Image (tube, rainbow over all chains, first blue to last red; front, side, top):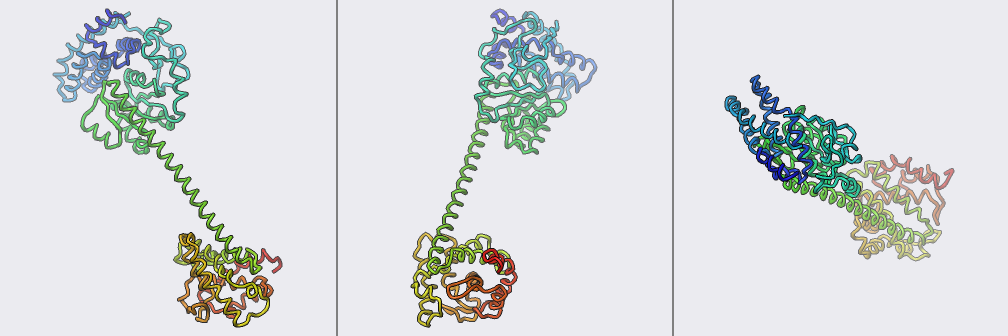
Length: 118
Length: 419
């Protein structure tokens, strides 16, 4: 992975060196999973569940997405989702929903950067 | 957000997974982590720090026993990360929920050296899985690690109480997980190896102990046989006394209250009842006719001589049979009515073992040919004993003896066909 790429990913909110550590320095593996991230349906599920006001589904989707973003060192996104999951668990629907714009913004920024990888 | 569908085929060799790696149970795309992205070919780049060709060799050199880690997690990335982390040193199995995990454990039980378990999973969650494992007694056999984002008190407490080895939080820090898991795998292996060694040594010790016991018995038999040899008895007499004594003690009321060990010791001791004869001159020992009163007095001393002899053998004193041997040697010629020798003991003063050996001795003497007589037919033997012609015995002992006698008679049938 070229330095420029790493920089771009970093700007989008991915702490590449932290992620690489988790993958034991295996850049190919990291890349592969970053690309998988784009296929992860959790974000769509989260959006849909919020629209349909289904708290359980939303919590499940948020939790999964949180795990993925944590593993891939998407620091800001991870922090937001952590907050959202906590809100869902505390039955604070409003707070959880309020976090969606930030979450979406971060998600799209990251997705764009990953798509640009190839 | 373009979705790049990755059309990776199911053929492991195409994905860069070595074909002889243990299968990933729920894998759909091959999880060794070296599969190239769609469209690219040889993955030479990106192999830093990880050589897939090394793996199979590492396994064949590793312990032929348990070297597989099972990763149970519904998150593909987690499985990928953990699998990648450990695949350098272990074989990896995966499952995407508790149910699949339990199946994988059943299949691979002997090969597993650790289980990494997520908490939140569909179908069966981590705690539920843990409960099953505990019920199956597996938690003592294989170290289980909870790897979870849910490090709440309640979860941790229940997990630790059930016997999980460690709770590791997600997202994982690689060197932490490696160290914790490796440490415990090593611990369990060391324990197992130690317990195997201990068991082996125990078995060896028992073996040696048995050898020593047999050696002892052999020497006692040799000693007694050698002494009996002088009076032209064969070694069989000694063996018969042993067998008769043991049979009566094991199979009638007479042996009541005695442990199996004690009975064995008494039987062994009975072999030495006449060792004192070594002190008796040939002329008396082998005289075919009746002994004079003086000669008889000398003959009687074989009882006390026997006890003295046994006393002189220090090693014998440690033998469990010694306690009985001395008593039997000394008192096997006492009589129930007090008319015996050397001490004129009467009734219950005579120990049960001296009594039974005394009777066995008479029974054998009557039933066999001796220097001074022929072998008597069985009916005559029984009659003589019953009517007190050959010594006075405890009525209760006689009762037990006659009960056992049909079996005992078989001993003589073998030796004198047509008897």
